[in-house]
Image 1 (cartoon, helix red, strand yellow):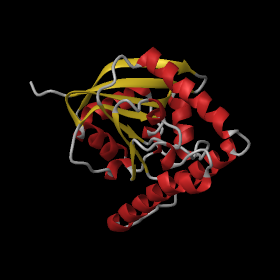
Image 2: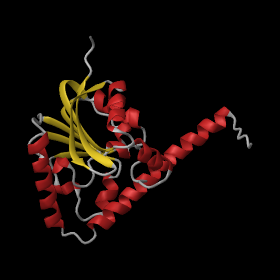
Image 3: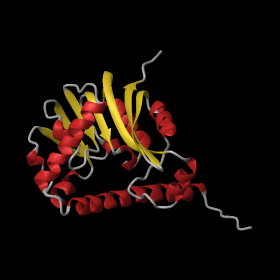
Image 4: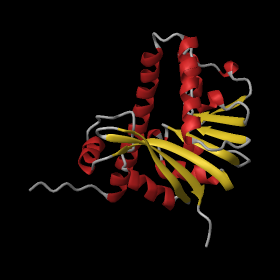
Length: 231
């Protein structure tokens, strides 16, 4: 039997480097994916389709949008494109690269939106928001717990947060996806129940869970979150 020995300090550094590399690889793949996906798409046609998608999403799933909104992990065509009547801050670590690489996105196209280039867990602001969106982004982050804690930090007692993500349906496939880079774009691989547990650990409670789309391996799930209130 081979006995693998590694000093604890070196083991911790190894694991930190490994998970940091996973996120950096995922970000690189994200840039490549967007560039390929939008390569042959007409700018006007694509943005019209995307806005229609978000408007339908809001009509079906978002009962109320407050006067101040935070779009975390906004991407180049997030929900910020259709909530201009609110004061909107849009955050993504790749904002500047999207603007450089993609003709489909420019900050000048959205003069009323405040764009901030930042990782979700590093985002800092001086105010709270009525509505926070984190759509198709929470499984892309570097530090999951810190990102969710940051969502909670910018909510007041009456705020709502809407977090959507792919959630594993089966533990067997979850383990495969964790150890084999079959889905390298998404460093985090969890079930719906595991996400709910993490939300609770980070000070948020799920007031509603909606399966937007059922898949063979993943369900696309939308969580509506409120701040945990002390008893």
